[in-house]
Length: 262
Image (cartoon, rainbow, N blue to C red; front, side, top):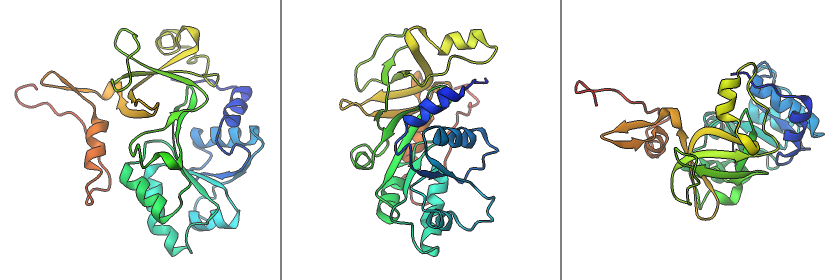
């Protein structure tokens, strides 16, 4: 699925970011689409982008300090490596915040980042089709250690299989209404019609729960759902539990059929 993104849409998405006009960096090289979009969104919002130099510029901590970077976007695994790298590189710079993207950071990892690196930790959740749609702020992690924050510049609803809105606490399919939504998939009207709904809504294909106070609890991709003895089980829920074990670095849960076909 190819999502066309106009310069105007990238600019608007950049303006919706936290600290939009600041100095930003990501260790992902701009040859990758996600990093390229981040670069264009930053420039469109009037910010400054510090380029990745393929490891030739020193450690990430040293790059951030040398160029006075205010916001660094990393996936959870890279943030975990920073916990070991930063102390050997003179400590994480005091003015640099971390944005976690790509996958929700486990609660235990968030605690370590805020205790050992910086309190300024944002966990962002979004999709290529609609950019960032929720942000967990630094003060949110203690109350919702596995949440991905409140809606950010958009509206959200969780629906059942028939598209009916579900109350807080009930898991279902997440839909998003945002001005940052793309128009559809390139040359794929059938798939576009399933995801880009009337009224400006986007059907993410993700399972989520809205807490009573409006936070989004991410439950994983709907396509990953496993049915075990008639019960819907989402791998992300199991993974979050296993990630709490101190001996576990990374975990992925998948379904395996037994000889009985269950």
